[in-house]
Length: 632
Image 1 (cartoon, rainbow, N blue to C red):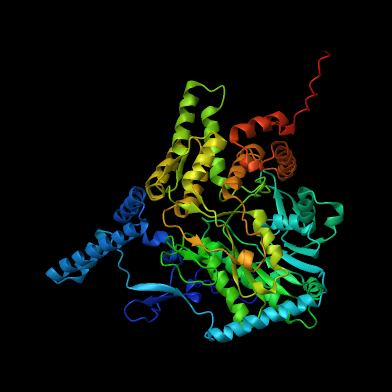
Image 2: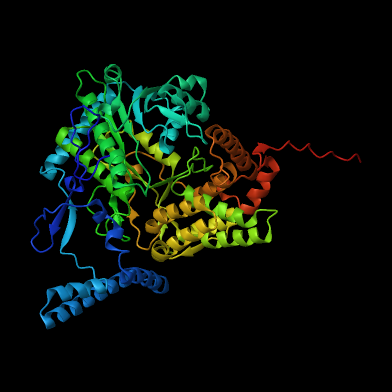
């Protein structure tokens, strides 16, 4: 396992390969007094929001009171200025107390006691290059020109051959699905690792699926037409290995054929360790970039460009300011988790490969990706936003389960009371983007050389507030979810909730709610960044009207309730069967009502659905015979 600043050997007896995973490779600590770098090393935890908050009761109380004041006054900027004034005044009092007794140590202790933030340093990203802005633009323009020429050389209807990483992930599956009907893509080569299948009870190895076998299962579950399946090929590889771990003979074959590399493999666990996040997100990106550069530099190669899939949250905490597409600066309020931090590092690696080494590469930055904008289908994903929806649903089921004894009912009530709190400030806005919109952007970028050298947010301009998410949860799940202050929830409520649920024999629910706190404890506080959008339309040519976020979130709730049974349906084949039927039913309801399915009122949707579907077995109900007309 890679350690910050450490080494990792690829195999026993092999030549040791140094992997610099220290944040100092990408980030510098600079003195606020002298402006010079402080060479004392940077630990990953120092770069997170919680390293500078949540470690002092006064800071926690101040964040909570600020949230309440914003709700009362609606004047966020004024409240923020007030916090800075109080912080400055407390620092002055502490300094005066120290000066009075001639002790700097007393002043520092007084500041710690009252939670004063008084750092004598700041962080900033290291310069990607020392070239002038004009020279960087000249090089980027040349890369765009070269890509356009190579694309033009393939004729008016270019036949593209794409290497894809992350094909088994949520985003990767949607790419495979949409490519089936994309006439521009002649072949897609997906890099997969073998999969070890274990017995769910004994954990013994049952079999090992080869990449080809895994790929065949993927295509079968996606229910792609036989004719379209000919364009897919699955090869063995590993993004954490040099050359993506692809065999030399396969690389030679790909070198003469590939036009694009789309790298979307990543760890999206917001609660993962720094080491795991670094290996998946930074090391994996470096290996993919190096592989693409090797293709580009090969003699006679048809390679056009590399597409790097990042995240719009590389901008970290911005406190309600705009996160611009064209820039990347270390966030004043730091990062929520190691996922964001390592994705920002990967973006810096991408810039270096482009500017210093001449790789033709575009960066696409999705926000929080949810299911299909129309149906909510998510290919069985249970992470990120799906996790709290499933937790709420299971808590409600524990409360309403039929045939319970009086003791079980009391226990169910207790579980529901502690589990149905959502950490969110009413003013907080989340940027949720449906997976189909994201993949439309990825596929569009294949034939848009102008995307090279740009960061493009695949996000939305109609964000959704925490209070609206809860309203929809109540309407769609029959769950009495309530908002709780995220700062108090993360630091006080969550530890008590977890301990209570474990005492009540609900360890899985306790774990799900801890993940809920990890995911939304930061993203649903007041002052979230506003992701600037525009390049998705201006450069990629996507539709100006972005998906309706409220409708998409409503369909996510419906999908998780009926299709996934709040995460209890885990069999991939069964989920694939249910999602195909769900898609058919959504189309039928739209034709019958004349409305988008996400716009149908909850009560009407439930009534129409139950006419057509046995929701327990998830099979169609027999069609009712038409009413017989009476003879006159």
